[in-house]
Amino acid sequence: MSHHELDVIGVGNAIVDVLAKAEDAFLDTHDIPKGGMILIDEDRASAIYGAMAAGVEISGGSAANSIACLASLGGKAGFVGKVANDALGEIFRHDLKAMGVEFETGALQEGPATGRCLINVTPDAQRSMTTYLGAAGLVSPDDIDPEQITRAAITFFEGYLFEQPVAREAFIKACAAADAAGRRTALTLSDAGCVERQFDALNDFISQHVDILLANEQEAQALFQTQDLSAIAEKARKMAPLTAVTRSEKGSILIPREGDAIEVSAVPPERLEDTTGAGDAYAAGLLFGLARDYDLARAGAIGSLAASEVISHFGARPAESLKDLAHGRGLL
Image 1 (spheres, one colour):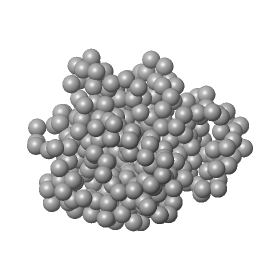
Image 2: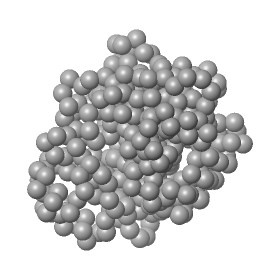
Image 3: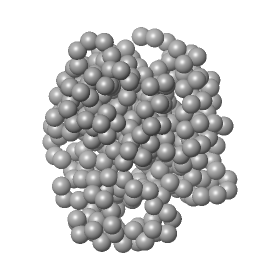
Image 4: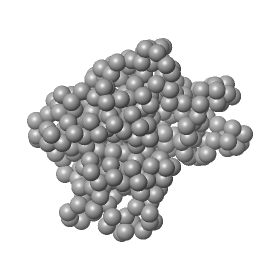
């Protein structure tokens, strides 16, 4: 195993998730696209929050969820993200640090409040997200510590945050530090809508800076402009050294630049409760395995197991020790 102090450092939105159950009619009433994510302003966030059913508030954000899962696997992780100097910001910071995650990004002293994501989960377990970014979108190059980046085997970027111009500059600074130290970078595409809005910029960024690309099937189709898996694989090989495409209950496909694609089976959950965070958990397992120099099939299997645990209950972070689960299956 190559020497590194941290397995993965994530750079993403620091968001507090508010999860509640809802019917499809609620989504229609509030013009919330089912199964997707849209950005909203503070006023609309207040209106939707006020109408939601009773729920739970937990620290979230896509990359932060991945980092939490990676810590649950026994990995060493760090996180870069922006919160405000407020109560939700303190909750977010406490939750990550309690898991042993390095989180030293300074809080925003003036300006928007800590971001929050309102997640309405329908009976079919689909999550529909409306996000007020607040402070989260203000990650800047000043928040990137090159020394911290060089201590991590993999620096992992969240596609949602790519949409913020100042955060994109932070990504590029982190990539330069990783490249100079011979470390790898990874990007999750996060949302097909994000891919469509940032199509040209994402293509350039991935081709120039990304070693490991993660996407679900819809995101991959949006990026590669085809629904044919063989064509996706062919295009993926030209874009990044490794691409992982998740396909829900069909498992995932790992596409290295050289060699055959590897199909990884899904792990059926004991009960499908809430798909929030499935991709985040998969990313954690895969990146944990790659940081530890596991072969692709084993790393992907850990990803599938982590995703299965997360979708078996309400919320995007593990309720059980992923390390214990992986040990039980002979993966660690």
